[in-house]
View 1 (tube, rainbow, N blue to C red):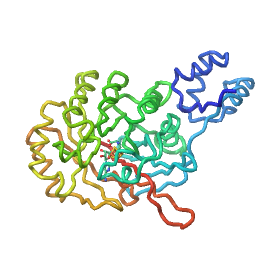
View 2: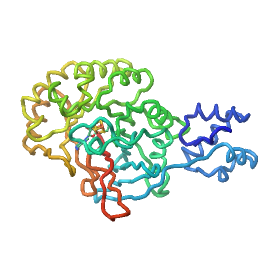
View 3: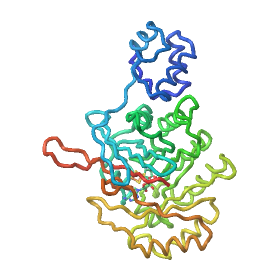
View 4: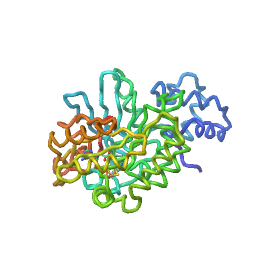
Length: 363
Ligand code: SAH
Ligand code: SF4
């Protein structure tokens, strides 16, 4: 017997195939997709336009399940951090960040991360497993529908736990559900994929998706980036910038890449670094988002001073780069970039145990 399928993770095309495999009409797939992703209904028996027979058949062959929310913490600025249980072993976090005109959801694509960037709590706590597409899309479902009075999510950023381009298929599948007009109908610019630079995967997705791209650069030279973002040893800066250019070449002419650059005291925050950065980015259509480093237990790195941040920013602006400094949101609940470390209650000791991490700012 075929294993039952979790329908929440299927794209519309996959759901159509599933219905056809049950000898049902395609349009039934559209109805169910709409119930799940537009109306937030995941109980087959409440899908009022399905016959009893079909409901029975669906229950026999499939199910619809989201991970359980085991904790939520709200910060004074309205940021909410959710702790989700995927299974006995794996927990992830997601964060909603309200702003005047939008509400952004920061999603995780992996439980943990294997890439071990030296400034990141997720990497520090190691890799558990990839999320499947139902676990990724469930984050958006939960953010939209678990609170009937809540505002609908307007933007999604893949800046939570994990490296999305090491889980490419499931990430692309979940993006197709996010973009589907019958689902969440998020336009391409409202979804941002952030990567530390898995160059071959970045080239592969260039033709398969059209979401906004953010590159976690963090250093202007290979020797420093090898240390901060170890995947650079495999895919150095030049290859990454070329891959970003290639990605742009497959997108709309006006698109730009966002370059993320964490400012860490006495590491990468001098004017010499800023000058090198301006030089290596001179031929890439990009804007730069500076991120004051957020500390976490176990790290001995420090945030740059306000003066260094201002000087760095002003230099880049003087070189005509659109440059912003990411506002820290939710840090009093460990909800800021790289701080969210799955503050999971250890049931035995009743203490907070740092397990995984998430980063939450909008860009
Ligand atoms: N793996 C992907 C996406 C998740 S990380 C990537 O690296 O891009 C999302 C963003 O948060 C990245 O720009 C990452 O560098 C940043 N980040 C990680 N740890 C941080 C910290 N301690 N302080 C500030 N930003 C951090
Ligand atoms: Fe992984 Fe991104 Fe953290 Fe690096 S910054 S360890 S790639 S989650």
